[in-house]
Length: 474
Image 1 (cartoon, rainbow, N blue to C red):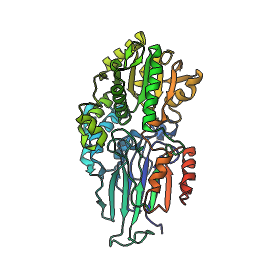
Image 2: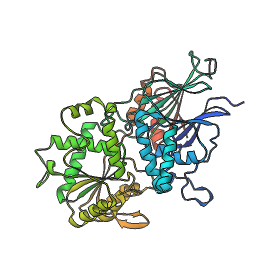
Image 3: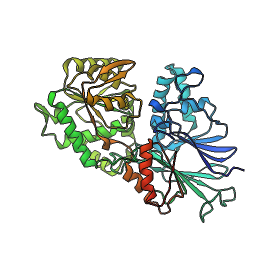
Image 4: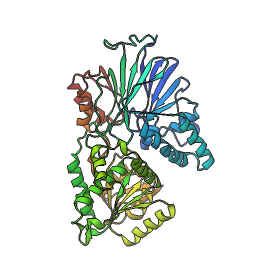
């Protein structure tokens, strides 16, 4: 007879997208943690000739609940497919994620399924009816079989959480091979943030985890400190503006965009009496955010002030507005977007554009790239992970050598300068991930590394061995 609990991975096993993990408690009962979209080369072939490749290819009849760690598309983008496959159970998430998730899914449905507003609204009403917001730090019983969950801040984006699962039998007795408490504790890290991420409090390790499912996105890298990366960001922008061109920053609409705005407001505030380049004071540098979704998320961020960290709330009390400052221009309508792209192509006006489409595979950043990637005055700054097979990865790899990239099926020569600041990742680095494990009072007996390339998993795995842990690497 099979022993339970079991962990089955339905995504992010051999890469960094499509996060979806099942905790099976019996033949008739299990839960999912995340149900994310695959991206780039990690997208599996579609069924029956479909080009999507995102269909749910595992049984869902026994799935009693879905737990969402955070609302990035590679963690929630397959929820429409999950509901279409017949899932009708509760969707547990943090209180901020309950506000943000409908915005993400509305955009995902419009891009991937239909723009029929009636159908979109019907889908969103169904999602909202299944949402169950949970406060951080409180145990909640979710299954009759004897499972409690607790969400703890993960410091990745607003609302992000890691999930503690406490499993016991109906009599509160030993649910497996746990220790002296008669319980098994399984922890799903989701995506962990760096301790110095803007706006968010740093994640704290749980007391214990018998089994830990741990992300490893940057398990082979070390990020710069916050002061160093802000200095590097300022330096890149100042050098880029010397020829009075445009600085393009591809960014995901939620998390990265708001963190960049927060850091740029700080740079402008500190340098308000200095020049970004000759004839252009920092105080006059226009920052353009071109993404309707990012604008909605930024407004939601402003409404979720209780979940900001102490530093960010202190800036507000001092009269500053880190997500809505004077130099910020927001582009919403498609007509305004087209006008802005054409204006910058003709004039080359020096400015910073943060546009939707973090890996350059879609979103408004693509039109900016088409218009400006062949202009040597343009600078493209990457501040987030670029998955293999995405245009962003190709630009990052081949751009410095004067290569080309394919955008919407057409080849474009890369004449723009390419920059990368890894420290602005919202992910923890190798040191942060190791500390998350090391600081547990009771170390895991099993660590399963997911959500990372093979090199990242191997590097992090070697570090975990120094703690006496031999991780499972797929």
